[in-house]
Image (spheres, rainbow, N blue to C red):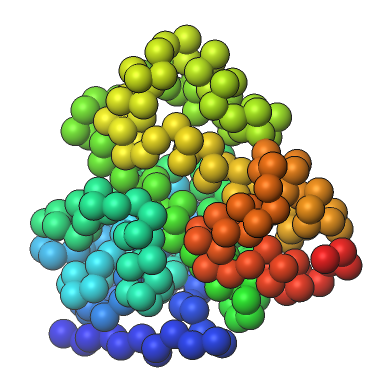
Length: 277
């Protein structure tokens, strides 16, 4: 069996994203020393990992750990396409610091995780993966890799908790949908609690049970991701982005942003080519 080794990360290398279109060959059994995931964008295939067969199709997101033995075979009648991403273990360890012990669940499962994303989630990941495929280097890319890994981890942890505890309750689904809107996560916890219509103690407990996080941390994640998009796609001043995302203190915003993405808002802005500092 082939064991693939990844280049060590440095200032110019943070991982890889490969887009593979209309695959017409079988990939032989192999493993590697880095974390990998792939997103199926078209067609169907069989993925074999640690002797377990998984059927994957559009929206399938598969998480592969170092030393998982896997391969896949396409259906002869299907036009199979996917994005494949490899991320160094050192970046995965950074996410450990944010999500805590729950993330270790993904390393202890007998078979690597395979989940099905919604169409909205699939399109979101396609956009992010395509951006990294087109622009794989630079400080902007490093932040995008960390954003990508964080969102992938969040999807898998949420799916794991649903398998253990059952589907998310309707009120929590309503809250998550409502808090995906900027005007709501900018207002923050007061809006979340009004939408939930439960006590803060109960909401805190249920967020931990189903999402492995707190309401405040969840809100801050939404704010930081929104800030990242504004930094990358607009010419808004950073101080204005800070306020627009619900952060009242610029130094606190810089600290949280660097903690989450591993680089400063200024670095993302510089890499994006926008004009305003």
